[in-house]
Image 1 (cartoon, rainbow, N blue to C red):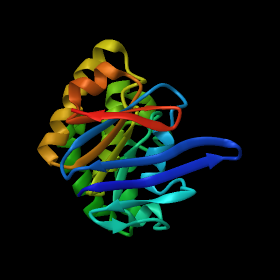
Image 2 (spheres, one colour):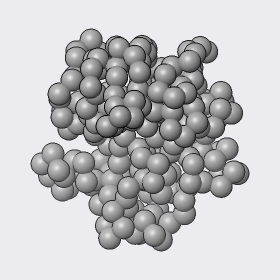
Image 3 (tube, one colour):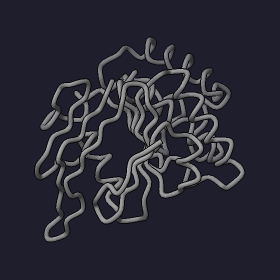
Length: 216
């Protein structure tokens, strides 16, 4: 699905964090947003997800304006920087949680968990708690939990920043290959320009709440 962001503005009190943002993300594209801390990248991603509300402007998914549509009805999957896994639930329960919330039967949900876990190479850790697996495995659990909903848009907020340098390099290739295999429209936020350059179809450079440049 394509994503269109039109004349988007957002302030927190007197602090203007987004100013007249215009972006068009094409169907099946991996589109990265890169910029320093405080440039508005995460706020923009959260508005697309429906977790924040813009002051003005519009967000459209596949030509449909989703302003005011709650997150659970936008059919987007989001992976947060800290992964936001439930520490007292097993890996399988973490991945299944979006389906269980939607009322999918437990047996059916766990069957889907096994399928996506095999795809992401984490089927051997399904019965463990998040604290019992590596950072790279936690990252894949977070990806699996977002993907199991079969979202039309995938939103990634600094998903590799908690990994060490060597693991981050291999994770880049994994995320890019996964995105290509699934063909899912993806918006990827990072402050690491080398990361953005290595995996993206196109990149938007942001600074102080504005888009400075967009290109391949």
